[in-house]
Length: 95
View 1: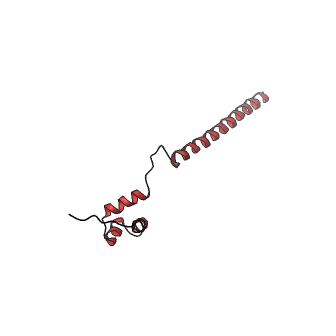
View 2: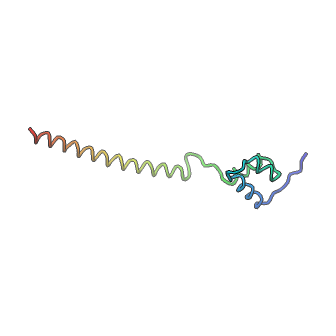
View 3: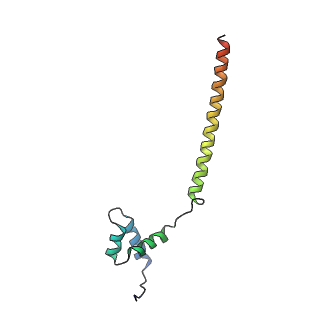
């Protein structure tokens, strides 16, 4: 049975930084550091926790996008109504 080895926070953060570089694979980085790819992926997950779809910045940005789209729709409906009135006016004026 292997003895659990403790790694420093600096080692972990440097390993994660190296793994995030595009020129090397996670498995390649892990192999060069003498750790398992599973452990490196675990450290990566710990450093950047996943957010649920219903909380955090994503939900806020969706709400902001919804508000913006509601304003656009209201403006377009107003423009459509103006054009309808103008078309009716010119249709009556030409008779």
